[in-house]
Length: 125
Figure 1 (cartoon, helix red, strand yellow):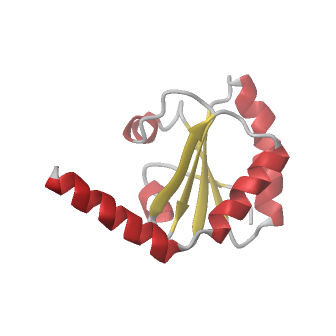
Figure 2: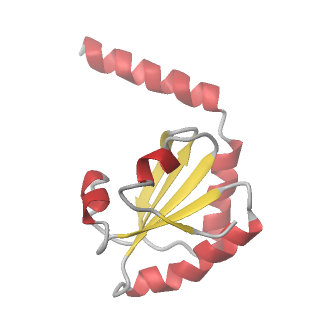
């Protein structure tokens, strides 16, 4: 699947849907972003069952602000509408593939259970 450009019109619908969505927050002027771009693109053609989206932080400042992006590139992974990974920095291909494998291997029932547990503890604090 080709990488899709995420904008304020399609961002929320894309990341809250079912399945896995990887989002690369980047900018044209960012050297590490340009280094990571080909790694991200290659994975998008190898793993067609995963959605890969890119947010140009210069053109989509509202999304970057809402996502609290303070450093680029920043990579986020969503699974079934839940943010399961967020980290700034460019990843080399082997580390990126390990991340994709880990996101695919997540037990989402366990993730949901942990979220409920954390919310319960926070409301009781």
